[in-house]
Length: 233
Image (tube, rainbow, N blue to C red):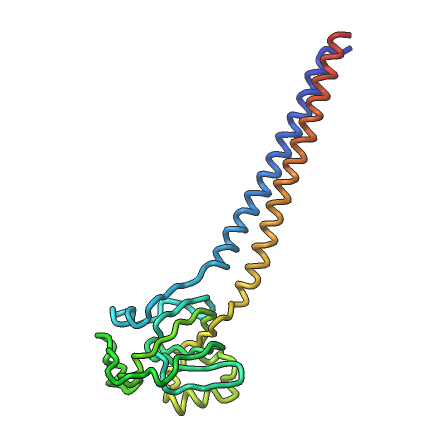
């Protein structure tokens, strides 16, 4: 018998095991990167916070881009509202955001003439965008931010309401937003699918690694036993 045969038989499972480990590790690493990217897309909410405090501090532009998932707190609920069977619409003039929500809005009876006007927001009253008592009501919204003209229903009457009742100019409309409270951007829906698929792929790779390692270890053990038997013989 060739004296080198046992050594070769032992080296072959070792090489196969190392190759399997490298392949599975690479797949798991790539899957992990996809998981992180998809998780960022799903969990990447832009938490703007208190819009009154933010604007009063001197921030004149909303720190969020259309298409993102945002949270805006302490919005002013204007007197001009539109209601449908499903949704309620109101306009917050701080960053010119039209909010569409299926949730109840604060009751108008809660407005009080002695409402405190935050320093730095007096211009809203001076420009007749709100009344002092409007500061008594607030609303927190979280959802899909879109350009104002892309709000569902724009061509079905909302556009006329914005121009005629809110008296926004075309220039103001172009720089205004619509916040669809409770809705998720389509990109995030796909990100959820990618995230779930990536997690399953990573788990499958790890399961494959475990199976491969066990199989190759059994092969190594069998090779070692065979080598030992040849030596005795």
